[in-house]
Image (cartoon, rainbow, N blue to C red; front, side, top):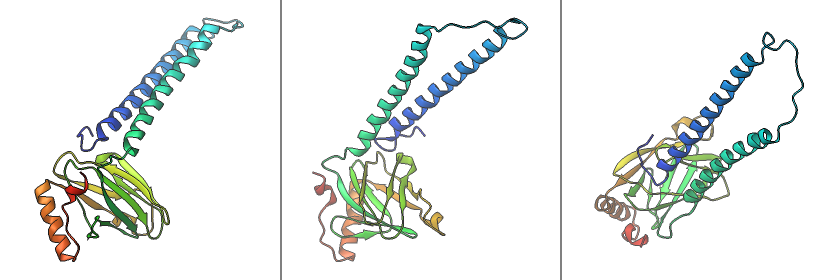
Length: 216
């Protein structure tokens, strides 16, 4: 956590910690009140029970405070969702195909690879398809995940912030060898990436055009 490896990781971590912190405070507050009332209104202290009349201010408070807290959580989550689903216009499309039990990646000129190579700092639009059963494309370091279905396209995007390698996993149980569906995102500097992309295009007899030109 807290490595900032994608445009979403910091906001997702902050949202997660905020919700956990608020939930912990609410839990401690309720627990403190429970203990207080157990002691204050124990049978020893109050042998004769009394009727309690309604308190409008108290009822408004215990309705309004949770409402404000939960609406705040909703807003933060909704904003994060919009950030993850609003794909930049200059994002480079990569077709990802899931099957039992592997991922394959197809670049705009038709080049195919079994590892997802991307240039650093470049938005990538991931087009997800399945040829058999349901899968789920999950990159833990980026805090992003999308379900992948047969006969339906789902979309996600990301942009790496540094040259590094990141794990890809399938987060939906898809059969006997589900655990085999691990792969890598390999983030390269633009020069190294274009060298790989050009060589792969020549090896696979595909027309080469610098991938960076597609994101302009």
